[in-house]
Length: 313
Image 1 (cartoon, rainbow, N blue to C red):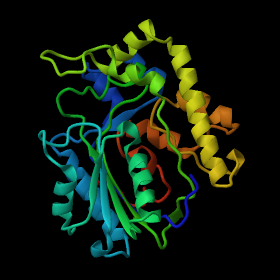
Image 2: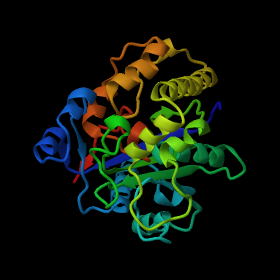
Image 3: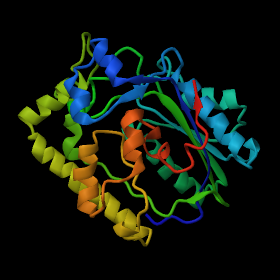
């Protein structure tokens, strides 16, 4: 999808205290072999800070950096993966109230680790379509300290650690420090059961299998891991290729590649090498410390400029 007249006006991030993988090993909650093999050094841990409050903090930073007045915001889109509040709570309403954002349309997306890019896709439609939105605020926040999540061991094959934090992106139809030139997305539904497992679709009493257990079951009964990884690589490369074509670029034109914060070997062999690019991007270095900020920050916290000022808890 070729995009015109959509700009990133400002970014805001909130990263809580950093916890080292080395300390997690010392505490007995992480096998020492895992960080040795995946190269990841730690993750940010929010503790008692609610996910939505981290999103609010990030949004305030983005608004402080912007020349836009809050009254100019035409829409708000929030995305998340993990717990935000009690069943029935509506995160955009909480965030809008805390920011004193007046009555504008709001949406709540649960797009997994693609949350903020999914929100960006919706915002592009609002800004270039019938809504003619002039400014859109994207937010997200996660806290994996909540019960039911194991930040150090739930990553598929221990290829990533779950990290806490908040992120906000303010989009403008007029100007910004960066322009969105293209965006493409898709769903690799052949691997849907890799995340879901073989369990019932109705909620039952008792513990559910962990994500690594569901993934292992899928690889044993449905599709070998090597085949699944090959499908992911080809799928991702197709999305990248279409985005480059829509932006009138070649892979060799790219100065930076901002990958998901995960095992650098997967990024190198699954993305960089097929594109013919050296795995020298700085995001791999910072990503090894940041962890998998599921649902929101993965792509935007690596954007040049996001690190100019990051509020820390």
